Length: 99
Image (tube, rainbow, N blue to C red; front, side, top):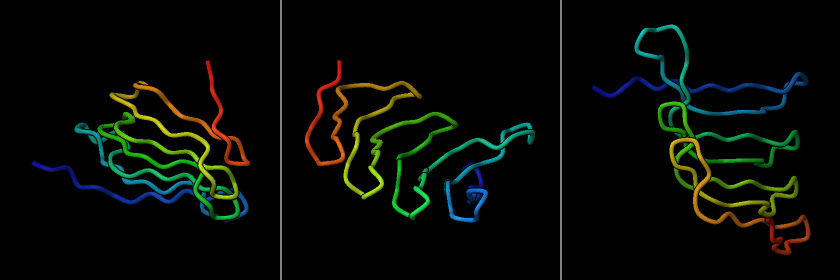
């Protein structure tokens, strides 16, 4: 049986949207577990980070962005752990090599 998903929207203290994600109630009904699309936003409304959760752990492609909307990072997670090579960009759009 598929879990029932609920949309959560969490604001900054000043009212702008900070997080939007789907979640499900744990089997014992005691806590919420992130499951599905996740987005975090800058105060100006542009996306900071987006990706997917599966049963509370990051999975699949994740992307991070500068406040201008330009890409900042891109890579994959598997069961909450970074995998593969991640790519990074500075605010000017130049790819940055990280050790």
